[in-house]
Image (tube, rainbow, N blue to C red; front, top):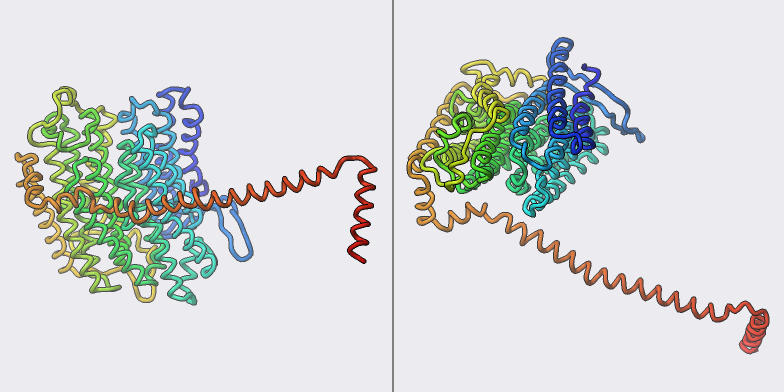
Length: 638
């Protein structure tokens, strides 16, 4: 299996081809079987490859499966090659198995959709592209998967293409991601020019060997991070992800919570040697991550669409991941990536179950009292909420705690690290508050929907509840793979250790025991404070707290509800000026160019008509013209 790693993405790609070409005519059973076989096949093949890797390789070694030489030009080139190492193994397990659970959930959720075959074709294609992204052995091959998941995101967000808002959201995601992808491309050009390769290992070796100006390394890192801000929804390119909730809910769980949006974090962790050679770039990553975590968390406080709350929560949690990799705790950032995949996929799928039970309703102000009506959904949603809030010993507590402790202890920029810690801690408090606000408004109090909705509320089928139960279980136990050193064994950090070589004296972070204990206690108290505040405001009082806040601080309430008017600002500063300049170029400049081209054509045509008058085909006329020409010549000569 190790020498046929290419089979792992090929299996779901084959599912895409089969459902894409034959699914519409073959029927729903065929589509379901092919889609589940494609996703489960990738998961099983990936697991087999990991077992073989552990049997044949020493920990930390890189296995390379070269398929063929892509191109060679002078001293540079690239291969179509797949690799397996500790980081790609972590991503492989998360993408394939969480992806399979979401495929299984989709069977029940999408069962009544007209485009059932099209949905699963896109979903299989997404998994194939995501596997290329994480298994590719070079930045260039990674970019193929990077663009592939961008295309799939556009297709799945705009799945309901007959609805204007869904089509607009798909285009928005596609265009915003192209801005970030431009940075990724320029970074690869600089790698070719100054490091001589885009292969991960060769780039790392060339950078560690020295001889490359630190300004070039910084430029490469910042340009890569520009690509990451687009794909992983960080300031200023985060605006596409909340709108992406226009797609089906399982899409939100798979693409916009568990896998695709973490690609930027994976890329920064993969490039850890480059970033540790540029503390400036690391500081930018950490500060942008901290700012995004806090900014998105404040917006989540006042959102009323159940999926929008989770969307801004995703943006915020991605900020935590970038805080981790930005302060040098690359293993901690990847750890939070893994735990986030568990509890956020559970939350998104749980929201889909709620929407399914509520006949399509997404406004939490029109829900309430669902605890007894859909108990499996409610319990799993509660477990995932506790995990994301950061209560011990649930998964989110350990990963978030390690990021915050690393921010406090970082030796790259100690002063800024303290600021990052404070911003992250405040964001963690807001996370606990808005998630329990969401939970109480959805599952407690009186039912606030219509009588018809109340009559039809029912628990989801087993194809939807079984994935919820598995993800809830993982949200409980997932944190034990990275216990703090003061209380246990951090298996994940040891697993990733070989991928983080010592660079200029900057090895892995060391967190003092007293710092670890202090941060854990503070994190637990912060989560408890957020929970207690939400409980006091929303349990039994329904919407009274929101109404009271609107009366006391209407300007703040409107600002948060309208997401700080960032979309409106982008519309005024970027979109409308571009549209106006495009209309000017079309109506004025293009019209002038067309007029000049038409005038030239008219002149040429006129000369042609004039010359055609003399071309009679009569020899005597030609002789006369020749004689007249001689006469004029002699006259001018004399």
